[in-house]
Amino acid sequence: MNITVVYGTEHKGSTYNISQLILNKLKDETSEVTEFFLPKDMPHFCIGCSQCFMNGEEHCPHFEKVNNIKLALEKADLLIFTSPVYVFHATGQMKTLLDHFGYQWMVHRPNKTMFNKMALVISTAAGAGMKSTNKDIIDSLTFWGVGRIFKYGKGVAAINWNGVSDKKKVTIFNDVDKISAKILETSKKVTPSIKVKALFYAMRMAQKKGGFNKADADYWKSQGWLETVRPW
Ligand SMILES: Cc1cc2nc3c(=O)[nH]c(=O)nc-3n(C[C@H](O)[C@H](O)[C@H](O)COP(=O)(O)O)c2cc1C
Image 1 (cartoon, rainbow, N blue to C red):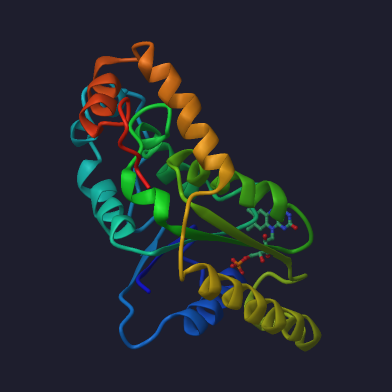
Image 2: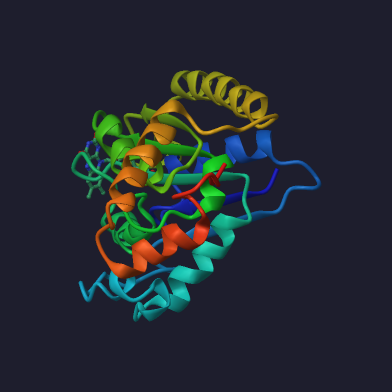
């Protein structure tokens, strides 16, 4: 299975180490693994020009960096997004990246390669906030149309991996085994969840009525989705 990982921090702490444990369970000698670290690999904030929505994503002033990540996401079977909890949410650099993919939300121009992919969202906190942090990322992945989304959040009571107690590490190793097994099982056949399909049909109805802008309307038409073609 090909895997693309987007780390919501350059800090190689608990979140990174847990991600590595899972990666090592999932990858084999045929796997292509591509990793991006934020903000290094996409350091720009969205400037709000809306060029991506109105005229096409290639008009984004940050297209080159965003497109590098987009191409790697497209070729992966599994997307892993990670973030430490910062004040109950994903890191600012992760939010900034996700903002740049607003145009591929299902309400606009969903990327058809997403519907048969899996994603795993991982967060760690000292104590609390994993649920809201994972949700920050899952909201985007769901509206991108990612077929199956797994999540893992862990309160590690530490500010780095060395500080995580041996007792906690044992629970993490067990969780890693379980979640990796689930992903490997699902990878045999990935179909979009009911939620993703329901969202697609709701957006299709809006597009049938003309959509929100010409770029979106032309896109949905060109994909054949207003007729019988489906992205999965
Ligand atoms: C700016 C900042 C904000 C944080 N906010 C929270 C928080 O809201 N809740 C929490 O439990 N821990 C919080 N923490 C602690 C980290 O989430 C926690 O140590 C995490 O495991 C760090 O992950 P890392 O080792 O991968 O960098 C915060 C840490 C930083 C640096």
